[in-house]
Amino acid sequence: MIKNDKQYRISKAQARRFEDALAELGRQKRPANITPRLWQAQRAAAESQLQDLRNQVQAYERLHSQKDTVLTLDAVEDLPKTLIRARIASGMTQETFALRLGLKTQQIQRYEATEYESASFARIRKVVQALGLRLPKPARLVRQ
Image (cartoon, rainbow, N blue to C red; front, side, top):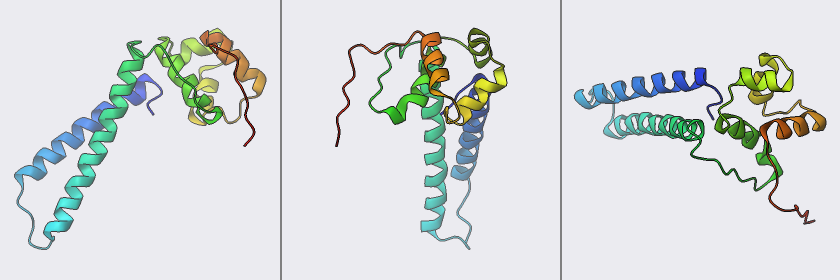
């Protein structure tokens, strides 16, 4: 998941490099010491990585342009990524979000890098409030 503009720029550059490498592979003839199956597997792996990068870039662009304004939370485990997506969709950088919370930018970077693993419940509540998030209806806990 791309979490900031720097990662976005890096991912776009990596995608361009993969595109160039795949184009070069398409122009090359398979070396005699590489089996056709291995040659195809290498190409398929590069294509798969390129598609993953494209998907991540597109997801970030959608969030950044605020096209994904409704975020759903299906499980508590999804909360950290939902908080990151909400920040991006709000148009806030990690720096502006840190200012809103009265924290240093590096702290937001750490929270997001570790998916809020070290954040206290009180901090997460403040993050939710700062993002203006709310649950549309009361949540029900079901014991399994």
